[in-house]
Length: 193
Image (cartoon, rainbow, N blue to C red; front, side, top):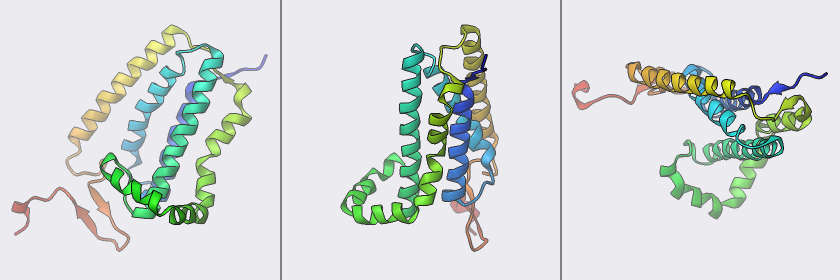
């Protein structure tokens, strides 16, 4: 009998892989990745719990559809950064309208970075190839409660780490620029004498 892997391993791979790619292609560094991975663990548990709502066929559809949406979001994030040199946020939605106005530029950026886009879709390709080796059935209730408890602990830890991060190393408030200077965005007027 063939052993099928729990769906949480796919979610682990997907989110950590996409987070590392984002660090490489947008931030251009994998430094300070600890806090990013700690935050993605919360999303991993949330999507694991959501992929245990339906029966096997519904869970499989949910995993495929949500994977496509998540990957497209990360690809959009990368293209948006390549166009505007800022990370997409809801505050920058007005600039997203500019992408529609300059769709040929956006298409050129996507075509110029085709290899990056392919790298973002590797988890989906692997999901398609190994779908028969993944268990899409509902997990045992005991395991679901263990992961829910883990999610709460991880959330509390991430809040504590964020609150205790006075130097800004995990949150990225101190940023290294290509020329080697460090900027601290946490300066106040009293610091500038």
